[in-house]
Image (cartoon, rainbow, N blue to C red; front, top):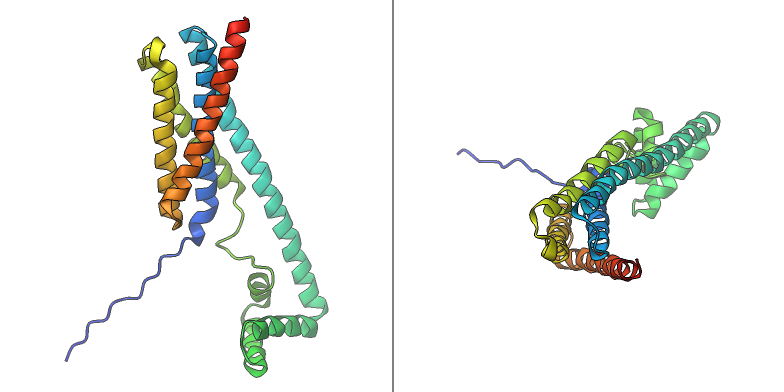
Length: 234
């Protein structure tokens, strides 16, 4: 009798966390920053050329700023991890017995008996002691490894992708309705980004969507108010 076996497959989200966080942050920032700037400048009764220039400047400067900031931030995290790894390597060389006891205690706290925890420790340290301590003592693994260039590129590209649609709206929307149309397009984009990010990350879509819509609408409302204020003074 033939038996059909289905291969057990698991789909975890840990590998997505780094690039997803940077991409979502970049896209949201691109939409909110560029749309808010366009709405503010348009509310001040600027010319179409000035509005387009301001939007393009926001796209370029924002993408570079996001890339630089993300690169510095993730590089700092990578430097910290490198220092932790070096410290752990030195401690393993200087105090093998103490490190074994430390790892055993970790497994005991997780629910293993002392005897089994000691056996697990012996086998893991015989295989790769540094990896065992990095993973189980410090929480450092290949999945969580900081990747500065990847994060910087994701931030820059996603910021530009988020900023491009509000900017393109400037060229197609009537001047009299520009503020309203840019706001609507941007809020729709933010809603989609919030829902997609929540779906990809395994979170609830409604709270994520409401959150980004609220802050995006608030940012555009504030810049529109400031634009009208300074436009009337000028």
